[in-house]
Image (cartoon, rainbow, N blue to C red; front, side, top):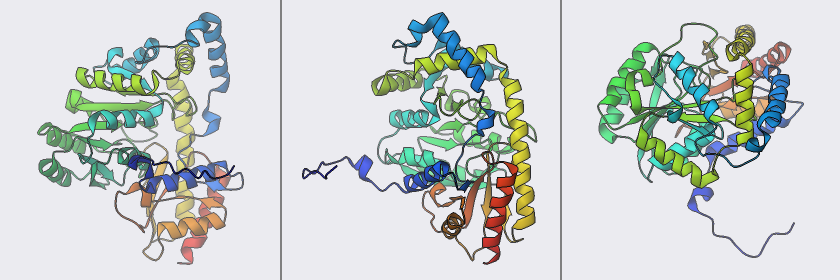
Length: 398
């Protein structure tokens, strides 16, 4: 293929520097490399995928209602699936109905839809520091003013949050309060209450992204922020981490009627609706299977892998390296000594056949940081030990 002599003028949205995107490409490269031990991505362990059950569900959908599965459908999503999601929220003590649910192409599209309908260029938003890198990447497309609130071991720094809200009146505060990506930390109940009281005093919406909340393997479950904020809390969820990421099925849950209409109208413009065939297969699988029993198997697996990684770090890492000990989810957060940056460790580890995710893309502004994210769910114990030993050897040289 030859380069064209005609220069196309692209929009600022797609030509602006995408710092997070550069690292996502590295993560995807690591995922596709068979000779790399990858702690870089956020992949569920494939041994947890219910392949046979999904195959059975697909046959049933085609046999029982194949025409509907292959036809156009409603923008809101498949009603039985929306009812299932709403019932899970009601089991948590949250008032929710199928009318509150909009099915999306994974939670990534959910974030894009919310940004599109809520943000004008220059609007202020609050994000955690560090925050989910793909959320930063998505929100940057709409050119907001990103304000960062520090994360403590118990959650967002509420004194700083109060100051940011009072000074900037941001459109929303985006957060992953359960087993946060990238740190693995969980907000305490006290921090949730204090954050909610702060947000009640302003227009700021709370966007609660909760892809890992069902994956708790120790400690006690915490209340959703919706319990404290009602319709000022918008919930984002996904089946990617609990059933299958390849099906690309997530959702937005909001009891605010005007917001629900706006996000539905916008999605209709963008893609009409999420893959109805996939929605029906997933719904049939959930109808014929016990999701909670499936989750127990995943939780047991991930606890074992998390314990293994922590034990290996205690064995192979220098004592001046610290790390979080998550109560669930898929990640832990490592703080390195000042003598080596995360990007330096990333480069040296890659040469040795180990992929990690440097902390830099999880920050709005900070660069050359000394933090890394490690994922423990997609490697077996022998690979975890080998990879951590290699990282430990590199760190000891510094």
